[in-house]
View 1 (cartoon, rainbow, N blue to C red):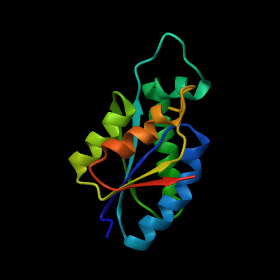
View 2: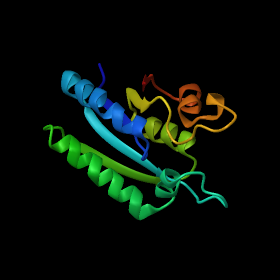
View 3: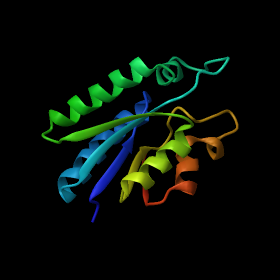
View 4: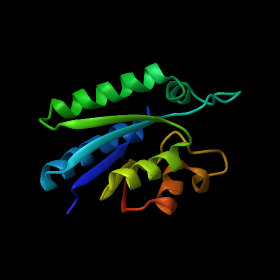
Amino acid sequence: MFKTVLFPLDASPEAANAMKVVAELVRKYESRLILLSVVEAPTIEQETKAQEVMSSPQQVEKLLDGAKAAFSSKGIDAETIEREGMPSFTICDVADELDANLIVMGSRGMGLTAEGVSESVTNRVINLSPCPVLIVP
């Protein structure tokens, strides 16, 4: 059913919480797992330390390597992709390129703004995705 699962992750606790669900899905459906992190262009004012991490290619690579190792320790092979751009658009582009069957994301990544959920990366992905999106609270 889910041949290819795309798991976009950032340094948020919500992404870390979604890892368990991703592992269960990948095992159950014997899916190909793709881990994706998007390097964001740094803004003038970084809102949080976690957002600073996502603007550093070295930190994003470290994040992906850590996630890959965590899945590997559970007996799950994962491929990693690092891209640069706007997270929501990049996630959807990669899902389309890979012909992903499912995107799994945490409910509130680092894109949640003062304006609310409507501007979050998760909400944008839900609206733009070429495949189903599973949101993990």
